[in-house]
Length: 363
Image (cartoon, rainbow, N blue to C red; front, side, top):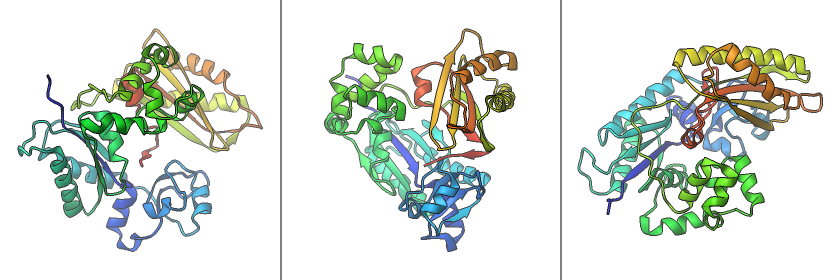
């Protein structure tokens, strides 16, 4: 029998806002939002003091200020956050070289075999958290388990500044009690479809047959089936493989004319082509993201045979996707985004964050 792996997921708490509060003591204890303070600004991340008022990442800054009149808004300093992120990675490397960054503020570590020969993964996680606090003046939450799925979920359970261990003997009971929205890879639209199917918890999901899940969700059905049973054989990947390239633009003012939306779509396609060329990326699935003036949003995707790299490759399918989207005075458009990705279950789980300028939303 193969020995169980020891996987840790480290997630920095309210990372951007925490760095700002650390570097500016006057901000400590105050509700802080990092982002642009303008008519079309959005919250990149919010301190826990701000979250008590309902302020969340990706929220319009205007709404955040209404929810929290005393909100302190700080412009982002991306280079500073990258520097701190590298300091956390240096701490991780003292224990293992098997590190898979998920974003600037979180990573998986495989410590099954570790440099310090520490027997218990929970002891390694505790030591890393102590060092992050002592050396960097920040807090991190940790999840510890025998696979990536469970470690990721566990790190969210006692945020901020907490740690959760999911032992193999308790994994199935733990999963059974999870809300389906807590499952990795289940977004709002998938959760809505699962609710329609009568799936609200991990226990409900476990009762679904593999055949039914794959009929409804395609290849991801197998992933959901395995997750419900505590199975996740994915390795901690030290080589970062980009799963998608995307860009999006928040418009200066909401648009209600389809002709104006097509013009904005054209400019977004040109930006996407530049990013694809820069990353030398190859993908066949194009996804259109539309956010409306009321902040509701939809996505539409199409997979084609050829690699999507040039304007001539991307613009026609982008227009086809836009054709099926409402653009009207009743539903004016606030944001248009496009991404190219690889059509695979792994891509769904690791879909890159949408990036607006240099701003990366994190939570």
